Structures are given as C-alpha cells and as structure tokens.
Length: 366
Ligand SMILES: C[S@@+](CC[C@H](N)C(=O)[O-])C[C@H]1O[C@@H](n2cnc3c(N)ncnc32)[C@H](O)[C@@H]1O
Image (cartoon, rainbow, N blue to C red):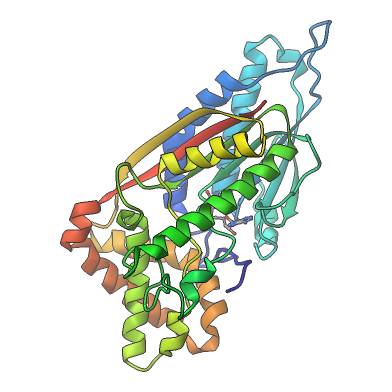
C-alpha cells in the first residue's frame, strides 16, 4: 500500500477543488467555536514595557490539500488572532503573519499556489511531507490547524492484510462490516500510534502557549467503530469492488489486499491519546476544548448521492489507482458505487446509524 497519496489535483470535474463542499460546510459549522476558543485561549506574550514580543505570528494548516477550504480556514484563524490582539490593546502592534501550507509531497501544490487569494494578508510557503513526523523547527509555531486530515492513517494496519492473521479483512476494505472484531481493534491501535506520532511532532514544534486546533470526522458516542456512518458509506465501495470481482473485472486477490487507511474515532479515543501522550511522553499539552458536533447524512436524493460519490472519488481515486493500476476502470467503479450508496441509504442499517459527527479539539502547549 502506498504511504503517500493525494486528493485529485487540478480543477477539473473530479478534482478535490471542485468536490470538497462537505468539508467546507463542516468547517463553517465549527468556525464560531474555532474563533471563540482561539480568542479565549490565545496568550499574547508581552515584555516589560507592555509591547508584544511576537513580530511574526506563524500558522500552519496541516493536510491543506488544494483548496478552497484551506484558504477559508487560514482567513478565519488570522481574523481570530487579530481580533484578540486588538482586544488586548495591541491594535497598532499587529504581527505579520506567515502561513505554512502542509500536505503530502504528492499534493497538487501548483494548483494550490495558483489559487492563493489576491487579497491575502500573509506570507505563504508550502511544506511537503507527512504531518506524522517533524515539519518545522523546534518551538517555532504559534498556531497549528488541521481539518479533515488526521483520520488518514500512515498505513493500513499490517495484520488486516495477512491471510494467516486473525485480523485478516478478506473481501472488505474498511472495518465497518468485517467478520472479526480484530479488524477494528487493529485499526484503532494504528490510529492511536499515528496520533501519538502526530502529537509528539507538534509538541516539539509549538512555541510555549502555542495552540493546535483539529477538526475531524468522529463517531458519536456511544457507538462501536463499525457503526460509523462514514465508514459504512465508504464500505459501499467495497461492495462495488466485490461485484467487479464476481464479474471477472478485477482479481479477488487484488481486492482482498486492498484496505483504506482511514479510521473514524470517538471523542474519548482522541482524548485518551492526548492524555496518555501527555502523561507518558511528557508532551506538555492541555486539552482546552473537545466538542462533538452531530449532523445528518446527506443521502436522501439522487443529487445528494451523486455529490457524495464525487466527493469520495476526489479523495479515493489516487489510492485506488495506485493499488489496482490499469486493471481498474475508475468510471465503472464509481458508477457502481453510486448504486450501492443509494441502496445503502434506503437500508435499515443506514436508518439505524445515520448520524454523522465531527470533533473539534483545541489543545495548548504548556
Ligand atoms: C480530505 S482532505 C482535507 C483538506 C482540507 N484540510 C479541507 O478541509 O478541505 C485531507 C488532506 O490531508 C492530507 N493528508 C493525509 N495524511 C497526511 C499526512 N500524513 N501528512 C500530510 N497531509 C496528509 C491528504 O493528502 C489530503 O490532502
């Protein structure tokens, strides 16, 4: 399995740029919370004659993709910081802003750079590389943000791809409908390892009192990992692949060895990872905000199913093509996916689990 993949680049019909409305709406929902909690928790360092000691305020968006959502996030972050500087009497001493846009090396940074807002009020730089490792110098960053990115794992947990393993995930591509609960356990353990690496890197990079805000899909509590609506929606892609195997369009072995490196945690799983990391590895974080926001799935009309398919294709096409190569007819797969999704949206299982949720977390480096 490739460990670096990208959302569809460019600005064509299947691009992430054209098909990331849901993530944009998720961010809009969380914006007031983000703005208010940054303002509440931001510490503005001053020297003895009451002038600020932050001439350059450094911000990063981790997993920025190709826009336009990253620009809306950065605008909101800068607005919140400026408002707080002004509220504390530093109207005439606003810092300059430097913004780092991070994503995997395979991300379409050219399309991102070409789309920079003409009226931007910050200096910008691209930072290619995985956010599961170090990206910035020690104690250099003031505010870091990531939306809808940390659910992507560094890799598919190895156990689920091995025929001899009790966690072998034969015929399925996520843990949503696996035969063994060992599969979801393997995914949960991989998520915990990856998040520990993520927080360890941020702990080194954030300056004292620096803030880290994360927005990500989560599953509402109380529910099992397999009851995540998002994972069940993605598993419909597994159904489409299974049909293609039955019809001889793909090999069974190729489908058996394909799994998505995605995990949707509960709020408490994320909380535990942060608390344990802070305790065992001395990461120095305090959790300032942890809030789950529920919203209904949008699959009630043919148009909503179509939009949902386009979103899935913009995010999954690269990883699917890397695995299946030229054997895969991507148009055919997503046509079938659309049918499977429609079927799922009318099923009793969907009716039972149909709440989606996002999690907002704000932590402070102490
Ligand atoms: C669904 S997109 C979200 C993009 C944007 N933040 C938004 O809200 O629209 C997830 C992005 O995270 C990136 N990503 C996933 N894992 C990553 C990693 N380990 N390091 C850097 N970027 C990563 C993906 O390449 C992708 O561009």
